[in-house]
Image 1 (cartoon, one colour):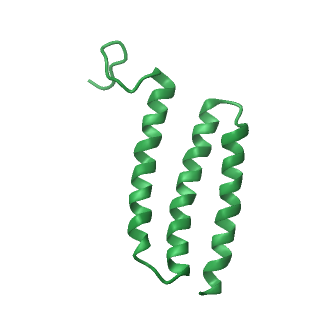
Image 2: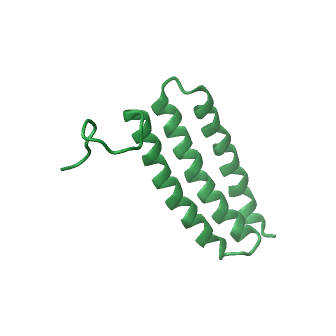
Length: 96
């Protein structure tokens, strides 16, 4: 175990707690979504740093997959928050 990766791991954990506070106490729904997105981004970073902390650099692949899932999930949540549904209909047509 390498100490130089332990300090960033603790720092990312503290920032994740701050993101959860924003999710819990956000005054608007968009503040809560932003906090959730920040938590997902920091989780990606945490997976990568912990992988290198335990000398498992192949965890970086898992971190990238998690980042893609977070990216797609946030867009789905934003669409649901705006339209109230994920279904596509003529009333809320997106794009051309």
